[in-house]
Amino acid sequence: MPRVYNFSAGPAVLPEDVLKTAANEMLDYNGSGESVMEMSHRSKEYEDIHNGCISLLREIMSIPDNYRILILQGGAHAQFDMIPLNLMKNGRADFVVTGQWAGKAYTEAKRYGEANLIASSKDKTFSYIPELDSSKFNKDADYFHICYNNTIYGTRYSKIPETGSVPLVADMSSCILSEPVDVSKYGMIYACAQKNVGPAGVTFVIIREDLIREFGTDSNVPTMYQYKVHADNNSLYNTPPTYGIYICKLVLDWVKSKGGLTAIKEHNEKKAAILYDFLDGSKLFKAPAEKESRSMMNVTFVTGSDELDGKFIKEAKAKGFINLKGHRSVGGMRASIYNAMPLEGVEKLVAFMKEFEENN
Ligand SMILES: *Cc1c(COP(=O)(O)O)cnc(C)c1O
Image 1 (cartoon, protein in one colour):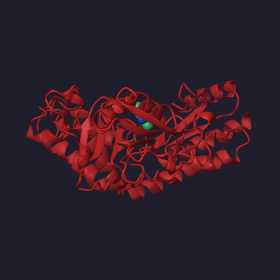
Image 2 (tube, rainbow, N blue to C red; image 1 turned 135 degrees about the horizontal axis):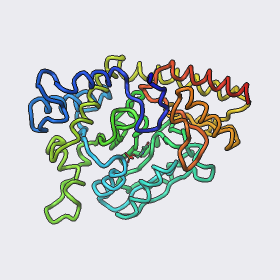
Image 3 (cartoon, rainbow, N blue to C red; image 1 turned 60 degrees about the vertical axis):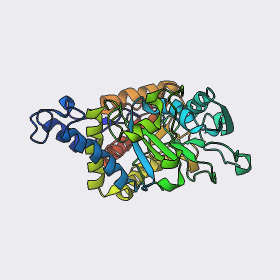
Image 4 (cartoon, rainbow, N blue to C red; image 1 turned 90 degrees about the horizontal axis):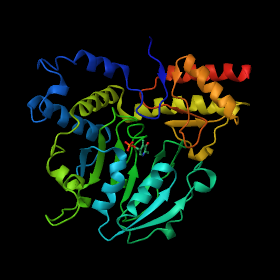
């Protein structure tokens, strides 16, 4: 069976070169005679992979020295709790709800303190990023949370909120490594790996050092939920997801070999433009996300008929374009075009969409 074009929102397509390298090294990593999966996480070989992954991420994203990179587990969901547990020192934070993930971060935070809803785009099924009125921001909030790219609805911020001295915290699960980011504008950035970095089971946290709080032994914050514990132990407090981290490192090597984030962004912009240009000219397909808020990674579209949507998804699958079904909460279609989706995959998808439009 030839490789399909996989438009899944996550777990998602990985660079073929990375998969081939992993396959070649499966039984014997770098002359060690063992698979990375079998290695002690305290071995020299693994330590090099672990530290290599962290230093490559720092280099590629130009992460300043006063930020720590943590490799954690529990997906982005665990962060919805870890963030308030660690950052809500005074018990309040601000939230913008632009979709399901932003909504979950907001709802979870309510367990720990006052979560203020600054704006929401729920009124129009999260099809846009709301204009933010900074006079409504709470000056004494412990942090201000946004979901930068809304995987389900296909929207993303085109400018970030000006939060002054309040640390901006961003969920970048579905857009990390898709373009350069000025990390210094954020207090913390987090992302699960399975969209644009690697396999599921790895979560990256990039956090400004001064936000890492120390808890006493009498604290009821679980040890595994304290950033300080992971920071102090170089994310080796317990057994990390070693194989997943190894794959992430291979992907980071690949990103670097492609010319880094500036080159990657250019490539991603090209891919997204091919799809959006087609959608804008189409009589059959429509893109529900507002133009100014369009995601570069997740392109949502509909025909307006559930029956035709279903037919499209089915016929596309038969042609080797898989996972085009939109999220179960919104329906329609979604093409996730992460870094590893080749330009050719998008071109062929659009050619198929044209053909489908002519026939229907
Ligand atoms: C996928 C995704 C999540 C959920 O990630 P899990 O690893 O399943 O917890 C959260 N936020 C965003 C933006 C996502 O794309």
